[in-house]
Image (tube, rainbow, N blue to C red):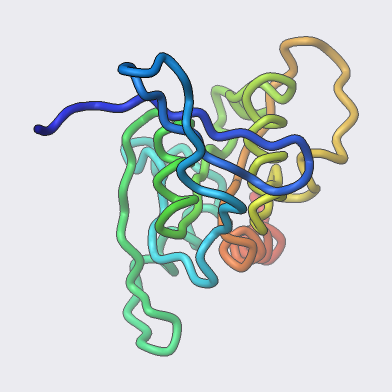
Length: 173
């Protein structure tokens, strides 16, 4: 039988663990311990429909992801569900990066730092990944307001390092 399942991915600061809900027992059962991002990611997740609005460094990074290079397993695959949690979960399991950059209409970014970026950043780091706003580590940003927004890049460490490098090398005029 094919159907959906309910999962809880959880950390207390000592690794990431996944639990699947068993409706026959009415409990969540541990199904994956000490989850880690794969060593190499091959997927990038971004709403490419907004490409024209992205900062130069992000545009260059997307082109980099699409270029063929057998030494880095590129081109990478583009997969975007449009849900931070679903895209993050797939990238955690299979390896990849989720990108939500700033745009002219949202110069500070669109995702909320405290209750969207920070929880995913904490999970990512506990699973060996990285989370950044393109310039600094998400978990180092001191919130100034409850609904503060930020650009957000999260996933495999080397992929987040790459997008940070592109943002530094190709700043907007």
